[in-house]
Every structure is written in C-alpha cells, then in structure tokens.
Length: 83
Picture (cartoon, rainbow, N blue to C red):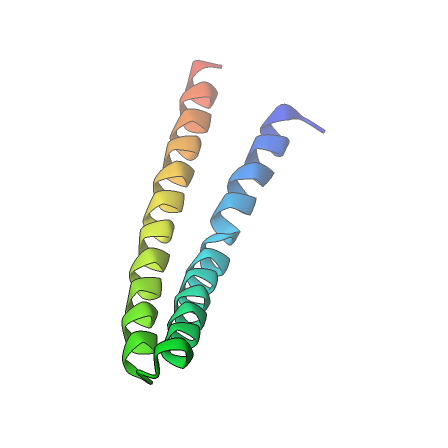
C-alpha cells in the first residue's frame, strides 16, 4: 500500500472516531453520576451534574480530535505541494 493511501486511512480513522468519543464521554459521565446517586441517595442530582460533565468532556474530545485531524491533513497537503 502506498504511504499516501496509508496516511489517508489514518486520517479517516481519526475523523470517524469523533462520534464514538462523544458518546463514550457522555455515557461514562451518566454512569458515574448514577452510581454516586445510588451511593449518596441524591437521585437525580449527581446524575444530571455528571451527565453535563460528560457532555462537556465529549465536546472537548471532539475539539482535540478535530485539531489533530486538521493538522494531519495540512501536513499531507504540504507534502503533496512539495512533490
């Protein structure tokens, strides 16, 4: 496989993982909040708070992955211009 094709697939894999990162962060926050609510008997307050934290963490992950993908695409474009 050509190095250009391999790099293209890496960029595509990184971009396709963005949705998974959002969902996982949200679900993890929800689960942590649920178990803390069960532990302290504060249902549904901690679950809602940690659900919000999960959403914020998911968007942060999306931002980081987007920046990495943009950087990789820019490097690929720069190399193509040099050839």
